[in-house]
Amino acid sequence: MNDSFELEIKHLIVDALMLKTVKAEQVDSMAPLFGGTGLWLDSIDALELAMAIGKRYQVKFSSDDRANRETFACVRSLATYVAGMRTDAAVGATT
Image (cartoon, rainbow, N blue to C red; front, side, top):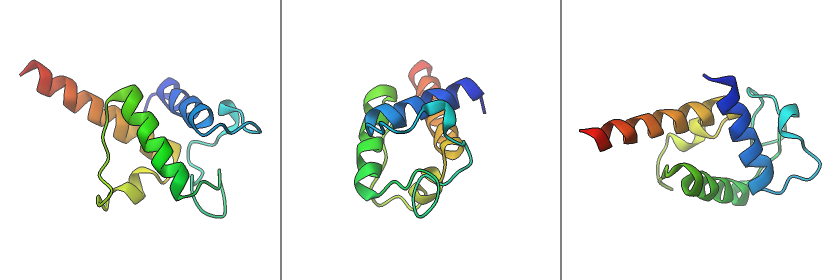
């Protein structure tokens, strides 16, 4: 995964969720986004983050998608998913 894209996702998280006490550069790419460690995000944060990602990258998430738990596990998994979906969309648009 591209470190600069992970940093871009970190900035999106910090900005979209208005995390005033967190700097994007301080976020560990492998730290859990939800639960008792990491950023301590909750389900409302997940919804807001999914909307922000959709708006910026035109990537959609399904509320009943079981893969969401893995996708939103940490910054790295989220960045990998978004990058993959953008690549798939670009390939689909050119065929």
